[in-house]
Length: 611
Ligand code: G6P
Image (spheres, rainbow, N blue to C red):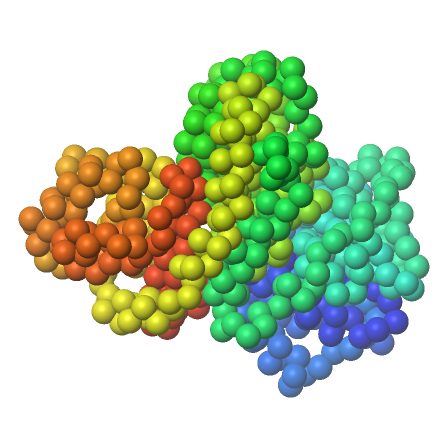
């Protein structure tokens, strides 16, 4: 979950590392720190809290040098504090380490190191790594790191350096604790946990795989397995545009990302549909015709917002591909004994491509012989690399911790996958395919039409921002949107919000309804409209406050509900891609009105690389 940056070259390492960390702060913001080689010594600056605190320290007490490493932390072992902030040093102060992951055997290692006389200065598990490197150091940091890293249990991304060998940085990746990317410059080299941190300097990147290590100098890098054999690595050229990772005219990344959705969805569709025949072309999905016909089941695995996208995907795939679909959280799937066969298609949805529970679920599915396709945003991420096929979201970098455009683009990917499988399985004829493709073509405009009325949401937030609880209700394909709407509100405004299938309200949540309880109800005109109007009546009969999301022109709804937000008439299967937008905007304005930190909500992180 933590962010990692490293630099070695002729420029000022502090500047480059701080710029990189700024782009990674969404990964964790409990503390931040850097170690820079200044006049042959490692100088460390670190502080609890956000990067701005570290920047203020550097302003007062600058440090400059040609090599260094930096870290933003999401705390696992040890409270967020200055003493627990990375980098951590060995007893001599000449070796430093930054780390992402959990050292599962740290108690045993710490006891061993304490018995050998090492002095610990933090409560973190990371500190055992640097003392282990010290223990094994005999003049070669790469050798010492290899010996030390080999003793760690758990999943890790680690960078180490020593002032005794000022021209080298050492990095490793073990398991799925987040990526380690080596950025290849001209006479300078970069290291980062995520591509956006170093994208303004280079697009040529090498990604470390499990148990690989890079030894980086300013002119290049050598790669090894942790066992010592060299590995040949091929650089990738990353297509991202660094401008897309800046906030531009918007106040928050989340706001920018909400407004980018029509563009992002256009990019997701582009080149993947032949609008003259309705045929879907998914070149990287890696599913042949016979295979598509042979699948008997789909299992979707994901976490957080991506799991809610999966729930919408269930409706899409069942309807379009005629396959039965199960959706599970990565964290649950990995500890069950799921029934998976070679005829099961496992679809993993993950914006970051690094979520450890989703990656573990994919491993489990692979062991059982399933075909694995991932729906991923971050190009070259672990999930993309370990899948049989990939459908990229094409959302561009998503920086706001609360996911928005990755959600809508993954819904479009699921729709495309449903059409693709439906066509291969002979379920969608040309006429139906053309109609589905036409709906897709109109989608970005429909999305754009609900983005133009920001003032309405501000006014609504003004009325509701002091409420303590919310209930969100939806039915059918918009039931997962009720879950997602509630998740958005609690993530960024810290208001308790519960999403529920509307039909289940009478089995429990109805007891909560009184004249203080606002209930957001998705009541668009679709096949369950009459049913959901019944729920509107039930809430009103108990004096609840109804905020409804309805179809333009629905005067009946306007008479019943206290407040109505409108969306245009929508094709049912794609309706969630549009209905979620007003709920994102509502949550956003509520959080702004409550003075919350929209892009970096407390306790959360963008990539969850620990269990
Ligand atoms: C974190 C993020 C969520 C995200 C979830 C899954 O909890 O804060 O926004 O939905 O992880 O992430 P993924 O990258 O796998 O989609």
